[in-house]
Amino acid sequence: MGRIWVLEAYRQSLSIARALVEVGEEPVLGYTTGREGEDYTAACLASRSFRSSIALPGPADPEAFVAAVERVLKNDSSIDAVIPVGETSLLAFHSVEARLRRLRPWAATSAEVAAICLNKESAGATAAQLGFDVPRSYSVSGAGELDLALRAVGYPCVVKPPDSTVRIGGLKALRLSGDSERRRLLPGWPEGAKRLLVQEFARGHRHNCMFVARKGKLVARFESRVIRADEPWGFGYGVESVSVAPDPGHWRAVEALAEKLEYDGPGCAQFLVEGGRFRFLELNPRFDASVVLACRCGVNLPAIAVASALGEGAARIALVGRSGSYPRGRRLHWLLGDLSGALRALRSRSVGPLGFVIWMSRCWLAAWRASVHMTWDFRDRAPSRVLLRRFFSSVKRALL
Image (cartoon, rainbow, N blue to C red):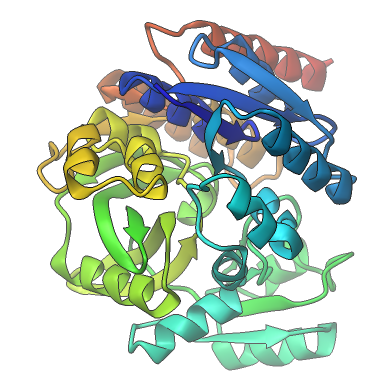
């Protein structure tokens, strides 16, 4: 049994820890303070899957955060490998990455590759070089350029920051269907934004192609289709998804990306699929939040990533998690994300009263039909109790 340091508390941190426990590993939580996501820090600390934890400085002081991680790795020889969960932590290690990787194996791609993936312009350019179908987009840096790009692309269109870690009005992206909606949602240049991408609106279902690569070659794969998200028009985080058969075309594209980038570690390529056509959306250099669905289907991506990082052979990788022969049609639901999305959409008037009722009906139907839930686990119930209690407290505060 090895001790695996899971850096930062997100909802997939719970899934990663539980998956590692399944194969006899001992997850250790490395959590930060003073950032968004304190609910998941509390949930992870309540989980029986994390046997121990290490507090770290928050993202407000990245140098202190990196120094603390390095100090732990030098002083605690019992840690066998590291899994950085968040995108910001991956980028924070860029300047000292080589030194940190000499101290311990990391189940993550390099910071250089992560930076390419997290910038939608560079990721789209890489995909286009490989001949993928990429939605037409323009990069703009001011209100005048924004107006020109909107006229060039036409409506409907999508406006989003090129940096995956940045939000626009609290959202990952805005869908604009016309001038009136533009005036309501984007009346001027967003405060604090340096650049924006204006992209043609691509229809279709979002497919998550989760994988683990080793020196540019895939060693595990799992595919799911997002049915609904926590924002209208399918943007945002997926709240309902289903496992599907690996599509040969999608995976040829993922293989080409992994080889081009010399990718090493876990990742998730996303495509928009309509009919027989698929278009590249983005490549996330981390475990997807819905990795629990892969794990419950027998594809233990966290365990495979650790085995790969430790340099273990194909036999061990095959032992900790199958890939390809997983069950199709298994459903995942994220109840709290669904409820939060419905309330947020109602407050922002993205949906009216009838739309809210329809959303809630779909939410409860999805909860009833799902065989996998984002954070709920009967064997580890405390995290869900923490999250539910905090969710209803936030709703109560909003109503008072």
